[in-house]
Amino acid sequence: MTPPSMSPGLITVAPAAGPRLVDGRGELSRAVTEALRSGNPPVYATGSVLKADPWGADLQLALYLLYELHYRGFDGVDDEREWDPELLRLRQSMETRVLHTLRTELPDAPRTIEEAFAPLLVEPVDLSGSLSHHLETDGELWQLREYAALRSLYHLKEADPHAWVIPRLTGRAKAAMVAIEYDEFGAGRADRIHAQLFADLMADLGLDPAYGGYLDRAPAPLLATVNLMSLFGLHRALRGALVGHFACVEVTSSPGSRRLAKAMRRCGAGPAAEHFYAEHVEADAVHEQVVRHEVIGGLLADEPDLEADIAFGCAATVLLEDRLVTHIREAWDQGRSALRSPVPGP
Image 1 (tube, rainbow, N blue to C red):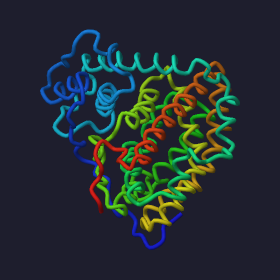
Image 2 (image 1 turned 45 degrees about the horizontal axis):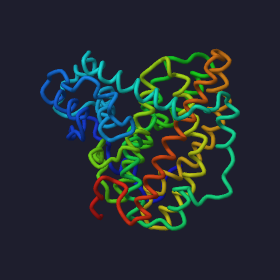
Image 3 (image 1 turned 60 degrees about the horizontal axis):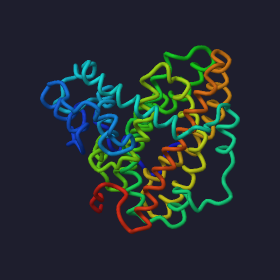
Image 4 (image 1 turned 60 degrees about the vertical axis):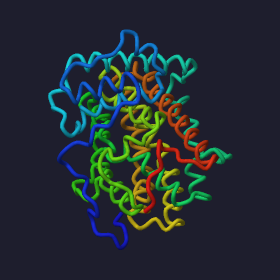
């Protein structure tokens, strides 16, 4: 789908230096930032990971910073730190804490594909708790701008975390996953890469399209949603969970994107802003079928023991997304920013 009245590649996602390294928000994240800046091992108290809130800003930011070393890194940070054994040891301890907490909070998580996805395939009768429904009907431009700033931490690297699973799949599952990712990465056209389309959306909304530009403003619930896909993606043992995460995103994307496209149009956000979500209405309606029948179907044909992991990945995604939506709605209902500090007006 070609957007009306919009030249391709309105804003280019800079491929060169990584984003600026932000300051820490507690002992763990400060240990990471100081280690990355100095080149020294991280310094933190014994037992601090166990004492930290697993969903708090300190631990989640520390994890995000360590994960980002596997994507674009940070400006001024040595690329070799990606495989620093002390940083990896700290990351592993935080990941263990997060995974344990997730499994504790999901004691009755579905163990079959049908249980996990059946609720997602039907639009709820009551949409009052839906963030996209609120934005479609009552959202204001400042809320759309905040929503875009929040989601930019993922959408400016859209599909990258899920690409980790490709070498861990075979046959039908691999072929189907590559086909979907090919679409996500623009089907051979740089101006249609979904991360590029989101950068164009941000430009339409008067936001900074720089990769990682809103990390310092990101609240803990948002960091947790992005970290989840990196956690699943970087561990081969969690490949089933990553497929579950990916499937959950694709299954729920099309209806929400339709509402967000209408919201952008109603608020006069601009053609690129509307186009990003309109593109996802069409693409993800197809992707939903492919991921359910070919990616999941193919994976289960090869590795049937992964069904519970796929279901867990879906349940964990829903849990953290619901938590983020609650955070955003509570902030907006109180007339305040859902970010740590509001973005300047256009």
